[in-house]
Image (cartoon, rainbow, N blue to C red; front, side, top):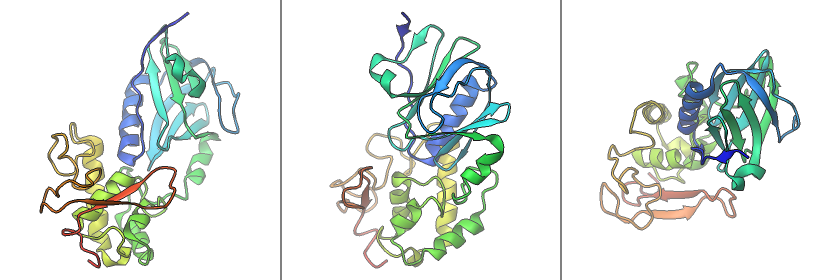
Length: 277
């Protein structure tokens, strides 16, 4: 029986997390050939992966695309609970995770790539990937980022609450709950104010710069204040009942959507983000 290694699991709820995950997997397993493995979820469950080669990894918002040569691609979305892990030769995932494995790919160097507890596992022809993700808005982390189009889409949602518009992946792909709350604070906007009350061009520019910093700069992952010390890395997210780092007012929180299975919350400073701002 193989010894068990506790793999490094990455939970990826936001676009910058997915981008970092893709970079890590690219360095660990890209260009390796799959000698054994299969899909265990989705409409292609049971499909063997043996004989395919991992060509690379691409992201669009919170979606990860693994190129499988020749001519295939694996589209996955981890939502809040999924993860990818790589174990060394002769190792496996912990017993507690084995029933949650959705993708297994044993590679030609002896390592194994595991997709764990992923709600979306879709095998596509490589030529079909663009169409499958066509509903997504512009992504600041992609080379085809179109800031003007993102701003246009945000302005088209002028009557929606700001947090709801920013969470809509059809407007800007890659913003999750943490970034939505932090961007509202940095824009001086009440999170439930109409999106049209905010300068769309300025917010889109701020969002793009923040995501790129988080995704690419060492030590700055999801640090929005510039201060990496525990409890001081975010302006409002996760800080309910604590003093605002800017003005000292107590941060407020409320559920964004009743009975939201993702348990998303909205945080804001009532002084720095007054209602009606």
